[in-house]
Amino acid sequence: MTAVEYNLEKELFQASYDVNSDSTTLAVVAVIETATSKDSLELAPLHYTIDGDALDDLFTNSITGTEKRGSTSFEYEGFEVTVFSEGRIEAERITGA
Image 1: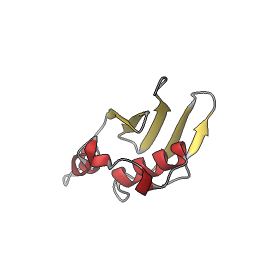
Image 2: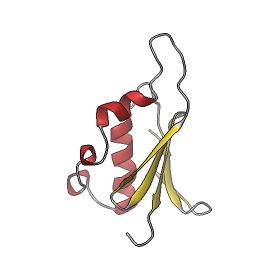
Image 3: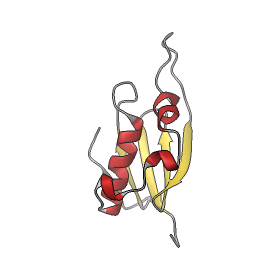
Image 4: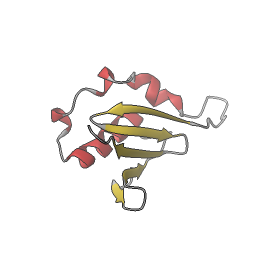
């Protein structure tokens, strides 16, 4: 996974990861750790928000090598988290949260 960076123009945190070798759930937690300045043990368990196994499998290429495309979004720890099929995660603070 690449380092988590704050994009001033978009006003969100972002990182890239390899969808076929990195855990999507761990990448999401790493982004939110940076965004909140909290340790992962201080965060609510991600599985309270989304099925981690399903999230990990969502964009992993199929056995036939077919590339999956798309994105999914969910709220976690006061952020709107969007995971993109090409291995990018964005986390935008929800105003008022």
